Image 1 (cartoon, rainbow, N blue to C red):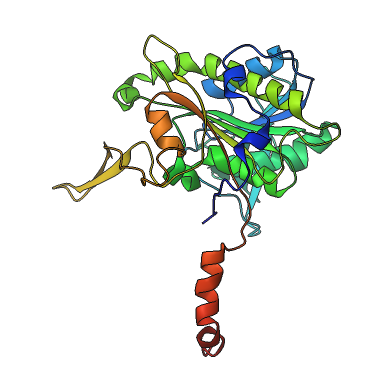
Image 2: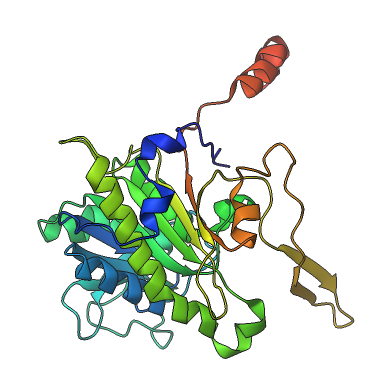
Length: 330
């Protein structure tokens, strides 16, 4: 599992929480690769696209063909049996949807389940890879920034490894492109009616993201990337019925999510999946962790870390067992 640390000093991001509450100055135009895990035509990605374009940025959108929430870092492996199709979204010249097909797929045939050669939607990371490696180069579009979202639902702390939204920017960071993931909270009571409160918040979250980018641009050194490449940002934007968020907090991923998942065996041998109450954050992290701040209706901004190297504690555990491990039989 990726180790997510906030070893980066939050202050070094050049983000002033108070300044973000107000409108920022117009941003310098960036090339933004926009992706998500909810699908190439989802309302969250559409709202963010509009906000970025309204701020003057150049945007190319590449997303999975359909909702792939919870896919994490899944991607199409080079097994010789799978190919990807990057298909323009109907009516758009610069939005693309990624599908998976068999190697026997015939160009121009149906991209749906009626075609036996169709395997389904590409994953979120498939979409990001296609944006970086195929669509961008073919369009002479070199992204300055990868933006992922806005997602239906927060992606906090314990849930980060499951999030295609966040894995997209970690994937991009490992390939040298800075990124920002944007997630908007959900009220699970609205699940059967389309999460109306979240949809209503998408434009506000997109506008906030544009202000974050403007703030980062205003403080970056000439010739340097917008963010330290190894430290993409994860922004979580709460929904507030009839109001606005309580403010902005610069935070770190903690140890608990904003809810738990409850599993229950049923009489028909199926297992129900329900929403449970959130757990309590560790006392040592409570003041800086993102989940308590998000539950208090603050917008949270957390830097992530793509460093796979072990922490000093992990190195110590390894060194303690080094001799025994080295003598194990294969």
